[in-house]
Image (cartoon, rainbow, N blue to C red; front, side, top):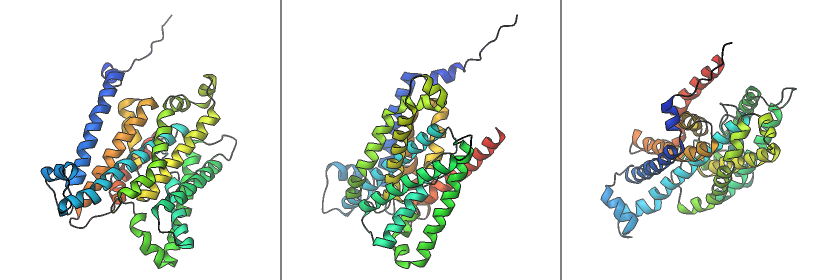
Length: 347
C-alpha cells in the first residue's frame, strides 16, 4: 500500500517565518521607518542637512527659517504620511482576510470613493472647510459604501463571493466617482477648495490635523491588532471558524468597523490615495505567511514606509514643484494590480 506524504515547506521559508526572526524583522522595520521619516524631513524643495535637522528637532531656534520649516511643515507631513500609510495598508489586509479576496482594498471595493464623495458633497452642500468635519463625513461615506457593496455582492444563492464583491466595488467606485466629478464640474468653488486633496496628498498638513485624525486612526489600528488571531481563523473559511467556536458575526462587524475607521480617517486627512491597501498586504503576506498576528503589524510598518518614500519621490521628481503622492502610488500600484488580476484569472 502506498503511503501518502505531505510536502513540508522549505527549511529556509520556515526559518524566515519563525517567531524570533519575525520579531527581529519588526525591529528592523522600525529602524527603516525612522530613517525614511528623517529622509522625508531632510529632502524637499530645499534640502536641509542632517545636522540642521537634528538641531531643529532637539535644539529648536525660532529665528531659523529651516528650523521653522522642519517643525511646522515637514515633521507633521512625515508623521501624517506614516499614519495614513499604516492605516490604509492595515485596512487592505483586513479586507482581504475578511472577504478572502486578494483584490480587496479600500480603493478597489469603493470605500475610498464613498468617503471622497461624502466629503465633496459636504463641501458643495454645506460649505464645509474644516478637515476635522471632513473626517466625520468621510467615515459616514465609507460606512454606507461598505454596507452597499457588501449587500450588492451578497445577492444570489452563493453569497458574497470574491468576484461579486470586486464587481460590486468597481461599480460603486465608477458610480460615485462620476457623481463626484459632476459636482466638481458644476461648482467651481468646490473644485478650487479640494482639487489637490482629491488627488491624494499629505502636503500642507499640520500637527492640529494629526491630533484631529489620531482618535479615528488610533482606535482603528488598536482594534485591528486585537483581531489578528480571529482574522487568521476567519480567513481559513466560515465553516472552519465556526467549528473552532468563533462568533463570526461579531468578528465581521468589528473588522468592518475597523476598516471604516481606518479608511475613512485616512481619506479625510490625505484624500483618496489608492493602491496602498492593495499592494502592501500581498508583499507582507509573501514574507510572513498567513498569520494575521504578524501580517497586520508588518502591514502597518511597510505601509508607513511605502507612503513616506512615495511622498519623498513625489517631491523630488518635479522639484521645486511637486505632484500629489496619490499619483505616485498609482504609478507603482497600477502595474501590480494588473499582474494580480492576470494571476487571479490564471488560477
